[in-house]
Length: 287
Image 1 (tube, rainbow, N blue to C red):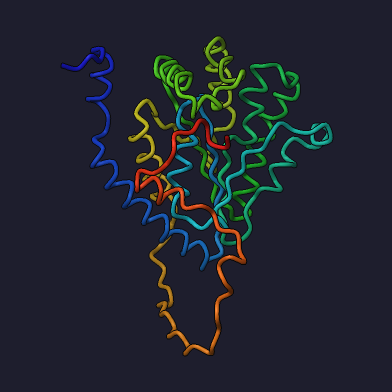
Image 2 (image 1 turned 90 degrees about the horizontal axis):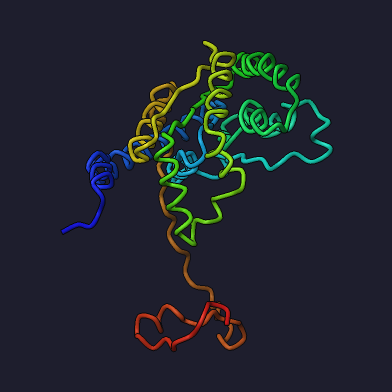
């Protein structure tokens, strides 16, 4: 009999079934590849802004979107804390450098909206800088859209209980503990402050030219499917035709001989030893 709590069983039962999720995800990823070819042929430019609560699943949504796309076409911009020099620039300046050229997509994993969220709540900007941002952001975005950039803005929403559960899960997982930063922990104690900042941001920046789209993300599977489906449904792409690819015949050999193997350094066949069960007991990798 399962030892899971009733809440955990209920949460699992409410999740999107894995087979259905995987099948639809695969279909949507195939459509993304089609969109990528349309983007290349038409020279379109796409910007997608990912914002939302910590642990809401923005990173995993980006990962599923980019999994089969060409990294030369799709760039993920996750800018670090601004340098001392960048702090003296116009606020939007360093983000402009990340905007796409023809045939490219930029995904902003956090964006200029840092000023409306973490900077506002944590006091990293002045009230005047915050007011100026709320005034300038819609102007900035209208200029992007006016210049032909396809701009989409998504807010990933997660409940406080689900966020707490995900934080606890990360604490227990040594492979994901790096995802917990002191700033993430502040999002717990300042939950209502972040809520007020988000509400104010939406009032000022949810504009017809670039509206905010809210994604309920307590179920990550549903959130990813809803995000990808919506994005594709709002891009006017078509299934672009491509030239068929044919592999050429290999030319006849001309007498090339490979140098002796002992002249090169080969990585030991650890995988083969693992398959054969002959790997000695050792400590950590690298010892």
